[in-house]
Length: 329
Ligand code: XMP
Image (cartoon, rainbow, N blue to C red; front, side, top):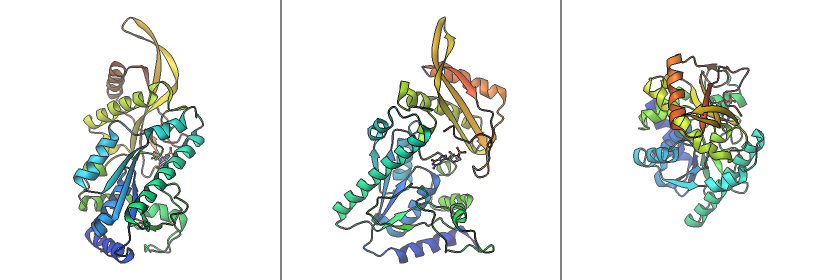
């Protein structure tokens, strides 16, 4: 049968017969479920010949770096190098407002850092890393090559660098994709067997370009990232407190590139506007805006304006996908 314990044992065998005893393997951890489960599985198979990197690009959520590093190190004992590249990313993004250009810059910086990591490892180990772990799932594979009948086979065309968005050109790494026959819910089951904490496995998806696609326009203006982190944290914490987190596909805040007039205390303010968004979805391809109780929205709005300096207006996005996308950029 398709039991997860068997799948795990099978995958470990495959990894061990693929990776030679002297070979080293690298993995970029995003903080998401797929890359974490993939890395944990490979670590179980080959141990310290796995080398992971986690990049803080300055576009992460409130305390996200600390939270995911704690899971990697304390719960999973993964060998992870954490790189703080905040300055590197933000200096390149300064003044950039076009959403596609922002995405391209982020992708390119990521490759630079990954490249440097691979070369450092080569210096340290005296040999090039040979394999790269990716958390590609079966739905990503189907997109490239529809399956004959219902049987899941190993042969497929790899959708190039789906997760990393490009690879160091001269490294010539071979791919290990241990999740490529699994669906998301199966990855969560596998993660559970591998002792990935339940709370981590249930985390909402988070886009690779991070908060850059949630600060509309220049991400470096007016403390936008810090404001967004605070607003987002209040929203998410309120959703958890109301026990709604697991029925929502994604929830987040967006920082708008405008100011509006308000009155706080007896002062006229001219401050920032944020929008909250929450959607339900099966796969992210289509989505419906989430119909919170008005009391919930009222409570969140008050909390945000009372505790986040620089915000005097909160709106709620009531658009589904289509016609909108889930993210605003
Ligand atoms: P959209 O905004 O296109 O998003 O409706 C659909 C799903 O994909 C996520 N998303 C991304 N994930 N890199 C990612 O890893 C990206 O560049 C990216 N853009 C959007 C989005 O959060 C949603 O879950």
